[in-house]
Length: 309
Image 1 (cartoon, helix red, strand yellow):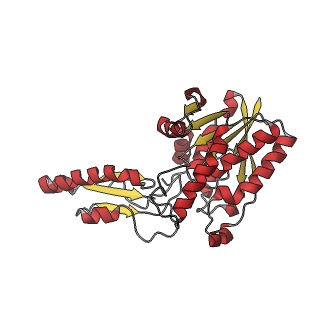
Image 2 (cartoon, rainbow, N blue to C red):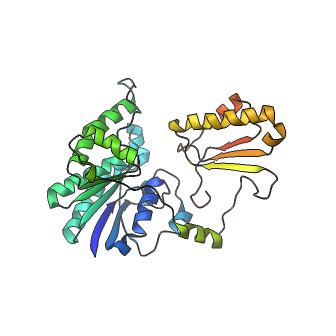
Image 3 (cartoon, rainbow, N blue to C red):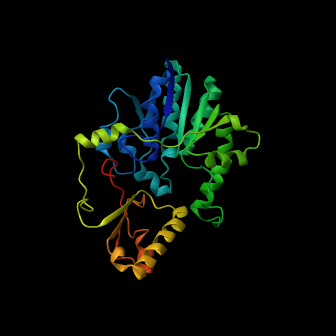
């Protein structure tokens, strides 16, 4: 069996998307002849709320090695919160140690955090071990493209444009959650060939639902037995989603005017719409108020634990 070192600072007890991405792989890699070793950080260095119930569905047999990172309580004072930056030195040094002490056949590195991609290029240079980078989201985004030079977003994008070539140029393969994400990378690097890319969409684990059946979670938002038709969206409200949201709200506004008795049967819930730890205002409710739908739309912007979701 071959060994794959998965460099994933953001892993359980985080339940953010990178943790799920790694979990979906590690649950099945051994069936395909790969023994996974996960390199992550100690929970105390994660900035998000820790999801210990989610941690219970991570197999105890999974080999997880953890490092330190620079504490966000201090780095935030310098304007740095990115876990990939805070943990980079520690993750790189531990990856080097593991490559010296074990037979590592491949590195697999999901991003975000994207700066961790560079661990792959450094290991490749020192040990000639191939690595695969996996785009959960694009590293180079439009965010910051039109911002003035004195903004953080502007310089973060500039840094991504400067560093991404080092990660991409020596990668053995590139995977992503969609063909569209891969295509954006291909456009930036014309020398890369289509066969160097694979799209692996997010899946789901049937075992998660089995766990819920024996360990039911509370639903504080509504009772499924009530008289309403509940439509629930659980997850971040991202900029590209607003046109779809607007179309839905226009349809409801029309229903309110033409068939008010049908309209009154609906309840829409938007849960966990922002990653911000201290939420001052929701991202959906203002539009609902503007369109006169506040009587049927409820927003709970704080993130909730995965199994609750």
